[in-house]
Structures are given as structure tokens and as C-alpha cells.
Image 1 (cartoon, rainbow, N blue to C red):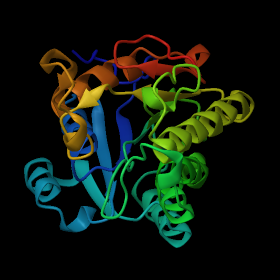
Image 2: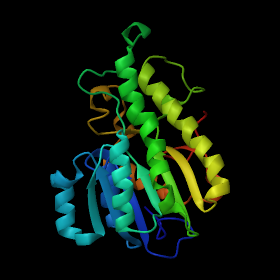
Image 3: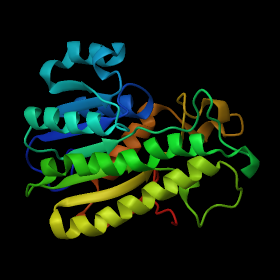
Image 4: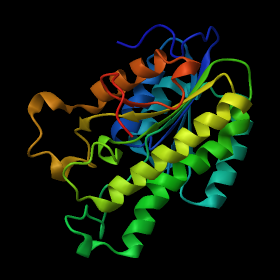
Length: 260
């Protein structure tokens, strides 16, 4: 259950931006936000956001409460253009929720051994999982420069924890999520000075029944395999309970901190 206030202490209508919004957790977060009475507008960002059937159906239902913007957040030109289009849509954001990420793709699979590593795969995985989230934050920081409470949240993964790594493998994915964690942890320190009303966190959604996890679900107990809708509710409930003092945390779906 998501509390009545989508962001703790926010008494005004909320504007949210969600990346990875065309499927999986991102799409479920968009739907949950649109169902929340306090949310005035959601900006849905994905590479094909303006040509996505699921998002088009939501626009038909919710009208101009949902704005779809196509952008590849691994591309500098797209991020620049996205920042301009967001600024034309709203002067402030209260929630930025990055749900974009890559675990596998054509030619990309989690490595079982170091001998399977190659520079091309590392570059592709790091581009979306590590570099894009921090560069997205940089591009949108002007929209957080206000005195109302706001949250900058990005999906990480427990396997990105160095302290929790007991199994090895998945080199590129683990390392890219660990890099994202450090980048956002560092950003949180800076934001305490420059954007004191913004809480910056990393979120682990658990194992969610999406195309990202599909090839790796066989050993996951049924009760620990979440639907995207449940994952969205759980993550947004965490977001709704955050305070500025929580900035810099790495939080699991159940509200517990994950070791770095």
C-alpha cells in the first residue's frame, strides 16, 4: 500500500519522471503513479516511449497526466534533448525513478567465468547500468532545484553489493551495479549541500517476473518472485517513507539496508 503522500512532506501535486517506462518494473511504476491521487503528471521515458502500445493505452485513459518522451539515456545527445523537453513540460520534478537496466540482450549474457569477459560487453552493460543513471541525474538536476521534498531513486541489485558477493560470476552486471552504487552514493553527498530537499537512494526490487529475469527464474521460490505490480507498490512505498536523512542508502524491497 502506497501512503497518501507519494513523497514524505510534499503537500503539493507531484510531478514524476520514470525511465525504462515501456515495460517491466518501469511500466508498473508508471501505472501505480497514475493511480495515485497526489500525482499530477508522469513523464514516461524509454527508447520507444512515443510508439509503445502499453503507454499509448495509458495516455488514452489519463490524457495529459502522462507525457511520453522517447530517449536512449545512454546517448549524450538524447539526454540533452530530454532535459530540454522535460523543462518544457514542467519546471520541477518531485520524483525521478530510473528503472532502465540491462542483464542480458542479444550477444550479452551474464558471465560464469572470467574467460567469458570481453570489452564490448563490459562497455554495453556499464553504459546503461552505471553511466546512464548518473548522467540522467546530471541532466535533470535543474528540475530538482526547488524547496519542495523530492526523491531521486535508481534501481540497483543485491548482486551489486561487494560485501554480499559469495557466489561470483555475473562480472559485468555485478560490477556495473556496484559502480552505479558508488556514483549515486557520491551524488547523495553532494546533494546534501546543493539540493538539501532531495533524497537520493538506490533500490533493490527483488526478483521480479520480467523479461530481464526470465532466463534466471528457475531456482527462485514462487513466494520470492514478484509481479511487476507488486514490486512497484513495494518500491514506491519505500520512496514515500524516505526522509532527507535517508539519502545515500542502498535499500532492498523490504526496507532493509544492503551492505555495499
